[in-house]
Image 1 (tube, helix red, strand yellow):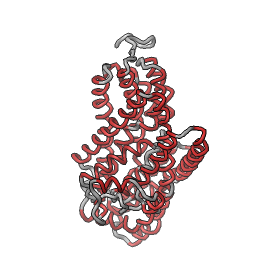
Image 2: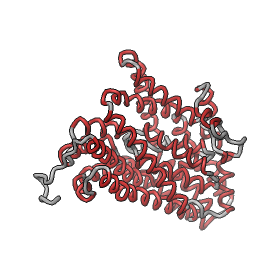
Image 3: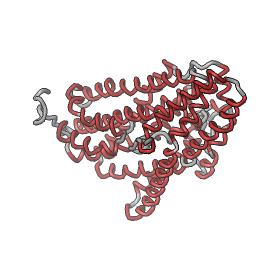
Image 4: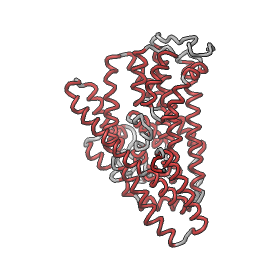
Length: 446
């Protein structure tokens, strides 16, 4: 029965059904009053209802996820040099992945092929749906000039705009970068304070995070129908033109993930880890297969820990620290995906993001990677604050829901591989990496 199918299968079925019905309606009844009434009063409102369920938990998710993610860095003080090296590597590798994604989007421009008439119709549709973001709005003090409001702050004023004088007001105004900064500072405070004094606060944050994730699970139960409604609305109004842009977006994301996986990581492993890339990728094949099939960094963690220690020679204490931290904080694939998605939707809606706005996307994608849950689909809600900060309609996230499962599987492979690369680099820098020449279960080649 369809109700027993896995969620991702039902979402794909919703995508296929919505697209097929929408194209058929567009080809046979474009402009018909009954079709316009159906999209305006049935499918579009239902799709927006599904998105509202996601939008309403963005603020508590950002606050709890980022605070808990940074609070988990408390062990850095005890591990000293290893913790500092892991932190520096994580920031550098994540920033590099986002920069690669943004470069590909700017070169290929997958969302730039829509006609002016289609883009104007899209803008009109999102203008009607503007309240759907539920308080997560564009045009906040930290927003990029793409929002079309007052001149954006520059220099020290831009730095000051990140630090909120009133976190509650920042949240109400939708200044998500300021909310992220406040969340990070709460996490830093927890990490630096005595554990006995912060245990109750951490428990509250963990409870809030758990509740938010359960709400998201409930919302995702509606995803097959929400995706079908959203894609039916788009294709019924605009035909196959939208699908061409979506296919180009998928190609760019997969291309960026492949380049970072097999080119960037190969260079890092060779130069910083002093390990043959061929040997490295042969040794972690089981980890990559597990990550691809489960779409979960958390589920893959036990396999990754064993492989990193026994097959790559990373000492247990380093592997445990780097991989456990990385399963939450070192999300290279997620950060690349978020950067590509934001710029694709900017091109899709005709929002011009200048250099400053794109640097803001890089920064927020790195920060969002710290708080991304290591579970399937955990990164989707955290794209919303990045979108609204740079003036892109939050409703655009609905366009990519139907294709996210494949992208999620692939970016999880990159996330997990990046954690293992980090462990190898840190162990080599400490002079304790001892890669076995052969493995008992291998064919003896190295």
